Amino acid sequence: MLKFMSLSSGSCGNCYFLSDGKAGLVIDAGVSLRRLKKTLTERGFSLDSFQAVLVTHDHLDHIRHLGAWCKHLAKPVYATAVLHDALSAHTFTRDWIAPCRRVLDDGQTLLKLLPDLPEADCPVVRPFIVPHDATQTVGYFITWHGIRFFLMTDAGRVTDEALEYASQSDSVVIESNYDMGMLIGGPYTHQLKMRICKGNGHLSNDECASAVRRIWHPGLRNIFLCHLSENNNTPSLAFEASAEALRSIDAGNGCTAKDVTNLQTLPRSTPSCFYDIYHYIAE
Image (tube, rainbow, N blue to C red; front, side, top):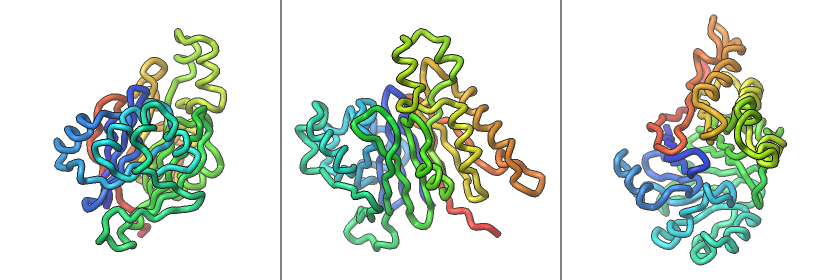
Protein backbone atom coordinates (compact mmCIF):
# COMPACT_ATOMS: atom_id res chain seq x y z
CA MET A 1 0.00 0.00 0.00
CA LEU A 2 1.12 3.55 -0.74
CA LYS A 3 -0.02 6.82 0.78
CA PHE A 4 -0.58 9.88 -1.38
CA MET A 5 -1.11 13.51 -0.41
CA SER A 6 -1.23 16.81 -2.25
CA LEU A 7 0.38 19.66 -0.30
CA SER A 8 -0.73 22.23 -2.87
CA SER A 9 -2.16 22.00 -6.38
CA GLY A 10 -2.61 25.18 -8.39
CA SER A 11 -0.91 28.26 -9.75
CA CYS A 12 -0.04 29.28 -6.18
CA GLY A 13 2.23 26.21 -5.92
CA ASN A 14 2.37 22.50 -6.64
CA CYS A 15 3.72 19.69 -4.48
CA TYR A 16 2.76 16.02 -4.04
CA PHE A 17 3.99 13.35 -1.62
CA LEU A 18 4.01 9.58 -2.20
CA SER A 19 5.24 7.07 0.39
CA ASP A 20 5.23 3.36 1.18
CA GLY A 21 5.92 4.03 4.88
CA LYS A 22 9.63 3.28 4.56
CA ALA A 23 10.64 5.66 1.79
CA GLY A 24 9.06 8.52 -0.06
CA LEU A 25 9.05 10.75 -3.12
CA VAL A 26 8.02 14.36 -3.53
CA ILE A 27 6.87 15.59 -6.93
CA ASP A 28 7.50 19.31 -7.56
CA ALA A 29 8.73 21.93 -5.12
CA GLY A 30 6.11 24.66 -5.16
CA VAL A 31 5.84 25.06 -1.37
CA SER A 32 8.35 26.46 1.09
CA LEU A 33 10.62 24.25 3.15
CA ARG A 34 8.93 25.46 6.33
CA ARG A 35 5.50 24.57 4.98
CA LEU A 36 6.73 21.21 3.71
CA LYS A 37 8.13 20.34 7.14
CA LYS A 38 5.04 21.55 9.00
CA THR A 39 2.60 19.65 6.78
CA LEU A 40 4.53 16.40 6.89
CA THR A 41 5.07 16.65 10.66
CA GLU A 42 1.38 17.26 11.32
CA ARG A 43 0.64 14.01 9.49
CA GLY A 44 3.20 11.87 11.28
CA PHE A 45 5.99 12.20 8.72
CA SER A 46 9.15 14.29 8.56
CA LEU A 47 11.66 15.67 6.07
CA ASP A 48 13.43 12.31 6.41
CA SER A 49 10.30 10.58 5.08
CA PHE A 50 11.26 11.28 1.48
CA GLN A 51 14.58 10.66 -0.23
CA ALA A 52 14.15 12.23 -3.67
CA VAL A 53 12.32 14.91 -5.63
CA LEU A 54 10.84 14.57 -9.11
CA VAL A 55 10.27 17.70 -11.21
CA THR A 56 7.59 17.98 -13.89
CA HIS A 57 8.70 21.28 -15.50
CA ASP A 58 10.39 24.61 -14.87
CA HIS A 59 7.44 26.95 -14.36
CA LEU A 60 7.77 28.84 -11.11
CA ASP A 61 4.72 27.38 -9.36
CA HIS A 62 6.46 23.98 -9.57
CA ILE A 63 10.07 24.91 -8.70
CA ARG A 64 9.85 28.14 -6.69
CA HIS A 65 11.41 26.56 -3.58
CA LEU A 66 13.56 23.88 -5.19
CA GLY A 67 16.76 25.89 -4.75
CA ALA A 68 16.15 26.23 -1.01
CA TRP A 69 15.34 22.53 -0.77
CA CYS A 70 18.60 21.67 -2.51
CA LYS A 71 20.57 24.05 -0.29
CA HIS A 72 19.17 22.82 3.02
CA LEU A 73 18.19 19.19 2.32
CA ALA A 74 20.61 18.16 -0.44
CA LYS A 75 18.26 15.43 -1.61
CA PRO A 76 18.55 14.01 -5.15
CA VAL A 77 16.46 15.84 -7.74
CA TYR A 78 15.38 13.67 -10.67
CA ALA A 79 14.42 15.16 -14.01
CA THR A 80 15.21 14.74 -17.69
CA ALA A 81 18.48 16.10 -19.07
CA VAL A 82 16.64 18.87 -20.93
CA LEU A 83 14.81 19.94 -17.81
CA HIS A 84 17.94 19.77 -15.66
CA ASP A 85 19.77 22.02 -18.12
CA ALA A 86 16.96 24.53 -17.74
CA LEU A 87 17.09 24.27 -13.94
CA SER A 88 20.85 24.84 -14.04
CA ALA A 89 20.22 28.21 -15.72
CA HIS A 90 17.09 29.23 -13.79
CA THR A 91 17.39 32.09 -11.30
CA PHE A 92 15.61 30.14 -8.57
CA THR A 93 17.66 26.94 -8.87
CA ARG A 94 20.99 27.52 -10.62
CA ASP A 95 23.07 28.14 -7.48
CA TRP A 96 22.10 24.91 -5.71
CA ILE A 97 20.90 22.31 -8.20
CA ALA A 98 24.24 20.88 -9.42
CA PRO A 99 25.07 18.55 -6.46
CA CYS A 100 21.49 17.25 -6.45
CA ARG A 101 21.24 16.63 -10.20
CA ARG A 102 20.10 13.14 -11.18
CA VAL A 103 19.15 12.58 -14.82
CA LEU A 104 16.25 10.34 -15.84
CA ASP A 105 16.79 8.66 -19.18
CA ASP A 106 14.12 8.10 -21.81
CA GLY A 107 13.17 4.73 -20.36
CA GLN A 108 12.30 3.70 -16.85
CA THR A 109 14.59 4.30 -13.89
CA LEU A 110 14.71 2.38 -10.64
CA LEU A 111 15.18 4.79 -7.74
CA LYS A 112 17.29 3.29 -4.98
CA LEU A 113 15.91 5.56 -2.29
CA LEU A 114 17.55 3.88 0.73
CA PRO A 115 20.84 1.93 0.70
CA ASP A 116 19.37 -1.11 2.42
CA LEU A 117 16.15 -1.13 0.39
CA PRO A 118 15.80 -4.24 -1.81
CA GLU A 119 15.24 -3.47 -5.46
CA ALA A 120 11.82 -5.10 -5.25
CA ASP A 121 10.81 -2.36 -2.77
CA CYS A 122 12.09 0.52 -4.90
CA PRO A 123 9.92 2.70 -7.13
CA VAL A 124 10.39 2.51 -10.89
CA VAL A 125 9.80 5.85 -12.59
CA ARG A 126 9.08 6.53 -16.25
CA PRO A 127 8.72 10.12 -17.46
CA PHE A 128 6.64 10.93 -20.53
CA ILE A 129 6.42 14.15 -22.51
CA VAL A 130 3.42 16.41 -21.91
CA PRO A 131 2.41 19.30 -24.23
CA HIS A 132 2.84 22.52 -22.24
CA ASP A 133 4.59 25.82 -22.81
CA ALA A 134 7.54 25.27 -20.50
CA THR A 135 11.10 24.36 -21.55
CA GLN A 136 9.99 20.75 -21.26
CA THR A 137 7.13 19.19 -19.32
CA VAL A 138 6.80 15.58 -18.25
CA GLY A 139 4.29 13.44 -16.45
CA TYR A 140 5.28 10.42 -14.38
CA PHE A 141 4.22 6.79 -14.43
CA ILE A 142 5.46 5.20 -11.21
CA THR A 143 5.35 1.52 -10.31
CA TRP A 144 5.96 0.75 -6.65
CA HIS A 145 5.14 -2.51 -4.84
CA GLY A 146 3.11 -3.45 -7.88
CA ILE A 147 0.99 -0.31 -7.55
CA ARG A 148 0.81 1.82 -10.69
CA PHE A 149 0.57 5.57 -10.11
CA PHE A 150 0.12 8.21 -12.82
CA LEU A 151 0.54 11.97 -12.50
CA MET A 152 0.05 14.54 -15.25
CA THR A 153 -0.35 18.21 -14.46
CA ASP A 154 -0.14 21.30 -16.69
CA ALA A 155 -1.09 19.58 -19.93
CA GLY A 156 -2.32 21.26 -23.10
CA ARG A 157 -3.76 17.98 -24.33
CA VAL A 158 -3.76 14.29 -23.50
CA THR A 159 -1.33 12.36 -25.68
CA ASP A 160 -1.68 8.73 -26.72
CA GLU A 161 1.30 7.87 -24.51
CA ALA A 162 -0.36 9.47 -21.50
CA LEU A 163 -3.58 7.60 -22.21
CA GLU A 164 -1.65 4.33 -22.41
CA TYR A 165 -0.02 4.82 -19.01
CA ALA A 166 -3.15 6.12 -17.32
CA SER A 167 -5.11 3.15 -18.68
CA GLN A 168 -2.78 0.82 -16.77
CA SER A 169 -2.83 2.72 -13.49
CA ASP A 170 -4.42 2.05 -10.12
CA SER A 171 -4.47 5.77 -9.30
CA VAL A 172 -4.44 8.77 -11.62
CA VAL A 173 -3.67 12.40 -10.85
CA ILE A 174 -4.82 14.47 -13.84
CA GLU A 175 -5.33 18.16 -14.49
CA SER A 176 -8.85 19.62 -14.69
CA ASN A 177 -7.84 23.25 -14.88
CA TYR A 178 -10.68 25.35 -16.28
CA ASP A 179 -14.32 25.57 -17.26
CA MET A 180 -14.49 26.80 -20.85
CA GLY A 181 -17.46 29.09 -20.20
CA MET A 182 -15.76 30.73 -17.23
CA LEU A 183 -12.52 31.15 -19.15
CA ILE A 184 -14.03 32.71 -22.29
CA GLY A 185 -16.40 34.92 -20.31
CA GLY A 186 -13.78 35.92 -17.77
CA PRO A 187 -11.42 38.90 -17.44
CA TYR A 188 -8.27 37.39 -18.96
CA THR A 189 -6.85 38.93 -22.12
CA HIS A 190 -7.59 37.19 -25.40
CA GLN A 191 -3.92 36.23 -25.70
CA LEU A 192 -3.89 34.58 -22.27
CA LYS A 193 -7.17 32.77 -22.94
CA MET A 194 -5.71 31.32 -26.16
CA ARG A 195 -2.51 30.36 -24.36
CA ILE A 196 -4.56 28.35 -21.85
CA CYS A 197 -6.90 26.53 -24.23
CA LYS A 198 -5.02 26.03 -27.52
CA GLY A 199 -3.11 22.80 -26.94
CA ASN A 200 -0.01 23.87 -25.02
CA GLY A 201 -1.63 25.33 -21.93
CA HIS A 202 -4.01 23.44 -19.69
CA LEU A 203 -6.76 20.82 -19.75
CA SER A 204 -10.37 21.93 -19.44
CA ASN A 205 -12.92 20.08 -17.35
CA ASP A 206 -14.45 18.65 -20.52
CA GLU A 207 -11.07 17.51 -21.89
CA CYS A 208 -10.28 15.87 -18.57
CA ALA A 209 -13.69 14.16 -18.54
CA SER A 210 -13.09 12.89 -22.07
CA ALA A 211 -9.77 11.42 -20.93
CA VAL A 212 -11.50 9.80 -17.94
CA ARG A 213 -13.89 8.01 -20.29
CA ARG A 214 -10.95 6.67 -22.29
CA ILE A 215 -8.68 5.61 -19.44
CA TRP A 216 -11.17 4.03 -17.06
CA HIS A 217 -10.72 0.32 -16.44
CA PRO A 218 -11.83 -1.97 -13.60
CA GLY A 219 -8.50 -1.60 -11.81
CA LEU A 220 -8.68 2.20 -11.63
CA ARG A 221 -9.51 2.90 -8.01
CA ASN A 222 -8.66 6.61 -7.61
CA ILE A 223 -8.88 9.71 -9.80
CA PHE A 224 -7.52 12.94 -8.34
CA LEU A 225 -8.28 16.15 -10.22
CA CYS A 226 -5.40 18.60 -9.88
CA HIS A 227 -4.34 22.17 -10.71
CA LEU A 228 -7.83 23.71 -10.69
CA SER A 229 -7.83 27.37 -11.73
CA GLU A 230 -8.78 29.90 -9.08
CA ASN A 231 -10.37 32.25 -11.61
CA ASN A 232 -11.76 29.92 -14.28
CA ASN A 233 -13.05 26.91 -12.38
CA THR A 234 -14.71 25.65 -9.22
CA PRO A 235 -14.22 22.31 -7.48
CA SER A 236 -17.88 21.45 -8.07
CA LEU A 237 -17.65 22.09 -11.83
CA ALA A 238 -14.48 20.04 -12.17
CA PHE A 239 -15.87 17.22 -10.06
CA GLU A 240 -19.20 17.04 -11.85
CA ALA A 241 -17.63 16.91 -15.34
CA SER A 242 -15.53 13.84 -14.48
CA ALA A 243 -18.28 12.34 -12.31
CA GLU A 244 -20.67 12.46 -15.28
CA ALA A 245 -18.05 10.75 -17.42
CA LEU A 246 -17.76 7.98 -14.86
CA ARG A 247 -21.55 7.63 -14.61
CA SER A 248 -21.66 6.97 -18.35
CA ILE A 249 -19.49 3.85 -17.98
CA ASP A 250 -21.04 0.49 -17.14
CA ALA A 251 -18.88 -1.18 -14.49
CA GLY A 252 -21.01 -4.33 -14.29
CA ASN A 253 -23.24 -5.74 -11.56
CA GLY A 254 -25.60 -2.81 -11.92
CA CYS A 255 -22.89 -0.29 -11.07
CA THR A 256 -21.39 2.59 -12.98
CA ALA A 257 -17.71 3.49 -12.85
CA LYS A 258 -18.65 6.35 -10.52
CA ASP A 259 -19.93 3.83 -7.96
CA VAL A 260 -16.60 2.01 -7.78
CA THR A 261 -14.06 4.81 -8.33
CA ASN A 262 -12.88 7.30 -5.73
CA LEU A 263 -13.04 10.71 -7.44
CA GLN A 264 -11.52 13.70 -5.62
CA THR A 265 -10.66 17.31 -6.41
CA LEU A 266 -7.36 18.33 -4.83
CA PRO A 267 -7.28 21.64 -2.92
CA ARG A 268 -5.49 24.50 -4.63
CA SER A 269 -3.53 25.98 -1.74
CA THR A 270 -4.04 23.71 1.25
CA PRO A 271 -3.03 20.10 1.90
CA SER A 272 -5.37 17.27 1.07
CA CYS A 273 -5.93 14.36 3.39
CA PHE A 274 -3.83 11.23 2.96
CA TYR A 275 -5.21 8.67 0.54
CA ASP A 276 -4.40 4.96 0.65
CA ILE A 277 -3.36 3.63 -2.75
CA TYR A 278 -3.88 -0.08 -3.38
CA HIS A 279 -3.27 -2.39 -6.29
CA TYR A 280 -6.58 -3.77 -7.49
CA ILE A 281 -6.71 -7.53 -7.94
CA ALA A 282 -9.69 -8.85 -9.87
CA GLU A 283 -11.57 -11.62 -8.14
